[in-house]
Image (cartoon, rainbow, N blue to C red; front, side, top):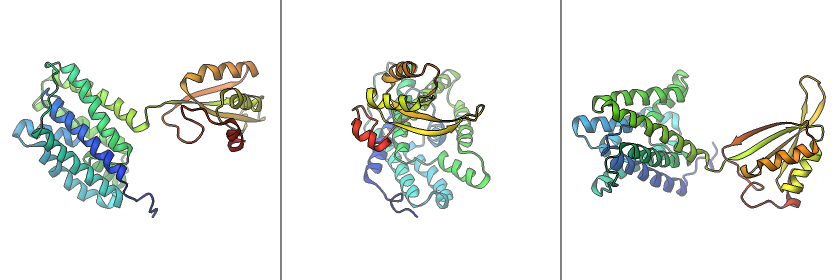
Length: 296
């Protein structure tokens, strides 16, 4: 077992605390006052609160612990600790925000409430998941079903969340359910944004008979690193080199212009990259001579 991978890091736990605080604040101060539902275990706690007056801080803990016991053999030491910490943190913050309410003045505007709940909830849970944590619930169920029955986690989580939202109609009308769906859409976008990183770069694959010239030009004129890959044409069977580079979105037009000047017939594919790490790609330009040594 990789001990480094299993190490418990303080920064992760701090991220879980901040993320669970945001998520819990949204549930207590936005979802509940504005009759917005939620998916997963959190959604079930809101149903139990609406029907029986049960405190979400307690039901979150009670519902998650049995699931954690069922899935503990599949999660591993660090995952168990992180998941347990996430569950306890969420329950604690749900209790705290009920003691110290901070209801924002939304003037009963359900649309604004849905957007705010989606942003804060997605940001909070996204922060937890970005650092390798979870708040339990449907994540654990989905993991167990994937390992035991080979059912994809994404499919299980979708079915469970959709089922909880449908059950929420026992205390919500159709209008508030529609606002909940808006919230869920915003939530998903912010969750994805937070998990993958907010800075989206552009990756290029450039197929050209003048690949070396294009590679040199990108390094010289744009100060971006490149790599050259050997490739073989599927139709012509000719050997050629492919240029790979990653640039800032603001530099996309410059890349196309540069390539056009060298080889107007070049075949180019461009794609988004959710996150790019490492020396040579940042807001600051890399050192050209260093890049030549690394990439050359």
